[in-house]
Image 1 (tube, one colour):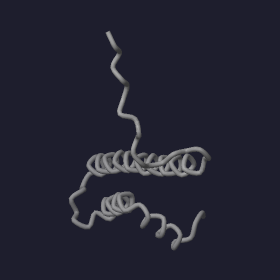
Image 2 (cartoon, helix red, strand yellow):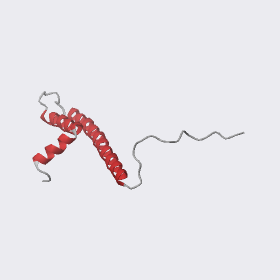
Image 3 (cartoon, one colour):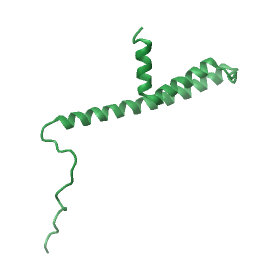
Length: 95
């Protein structure tokens, strides 16, 4: 067993879209409404939920990677972040 229940819940709360997807999958497992009478219907619902979870997970990962890259770039010396450019562009060539 990996992380504690509390740690898992804290991580899920940090990613609300993933938490929502996990909740959706649990609803399929519980089938409280009784709408999934056949295994094929449940399988299709799980496949749909897993695809969405994969897309959302990859998007969350990419956002985290971009934030890390921006933080590293900001720590490098000589990196100018923000402010206006002083250049008005390239001067036209004389004929």
